[in-house]
Length: 410
Image (tube, rainbow, N blue to C red; front, top):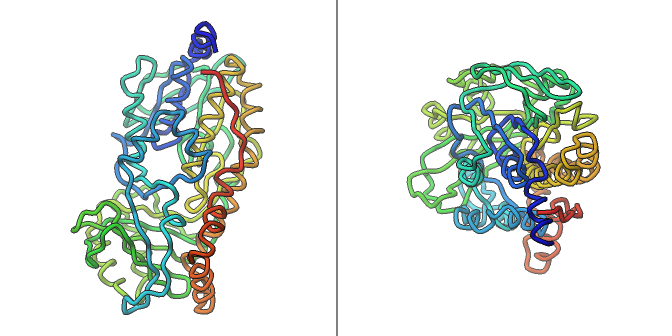
């Protein structure tokens, strides 16, 4: 590429002002990509500051590595990775049943979601063409042939050329433009919860998981802190009614106390830690299925458009899709109709493949019977053997690499 061509690529979107809703992973990722093409980007996030902590997320295979290297953050992710080791399914007395290899649970590299967000935020916060609005959210969206009129809960109204909904499984942007989430969110029969707990097992970058039919309780230490660990719960359930926005998590804690009463192992100690937990992640294991990823000048990215709560490499899919979305906009010189259609064509089969993998997460962690638990253990004992290690690695990477990346101009 000549210098003139490179300069043109970096200014391909300089005429666009793009609003991105959400500053978790997909939002900062697409902000970084769009800014490199010269777009002016505003990222709005309802939380008062960048969210810290969260579950660990992993990347695997050459596609994830190519995109993260292109973004300039591959080395930094490795520097901040969890370095998580083997995780073990145990009996009630703590004796091991089967080891789950790091390559299966943690991919090629694993990092806390909050750390990943921070890396991309650090790369974008001081750019002259990127602005973050924390503690705010979109109130209304008025799409027109030439622009999108946006009102916020706090900031004054503004006009944008495009809006990217990167605001998660329960996306407000999707609700405003596409309709109520009940039309798109499919409950898969399980719930997941996570919260901080004392490291009562003295774990060091490993985790223990205990299962009874339809219920799993786990404790893991991801960062080497001898005093700190994270509790992880998965249980089978019909859809539940609770106040998702209650900062005290009153309903969720009551549900967990009721569902985990009588479970063996160290579950009583985990429930005691739950009472003191200030932060609690609690959500259904669900998937988002929309007919289209864009409507007018609004487009969905990441979990908002094709999310799966866990097990579907959603973070990797969001990073790859952000690369494609920004690249297609640059290739189309900002023509959103052309770019959005190409974006959907490029990522459609890829994200659906990742979602299919996610459908196995609930049954894997919380099989419905003792027989199912034994069958799962036998399967992973075999796949974890040295003889099948290469096959196992290819199996876990298949969905993550099922896309042919274009080389967009830089």
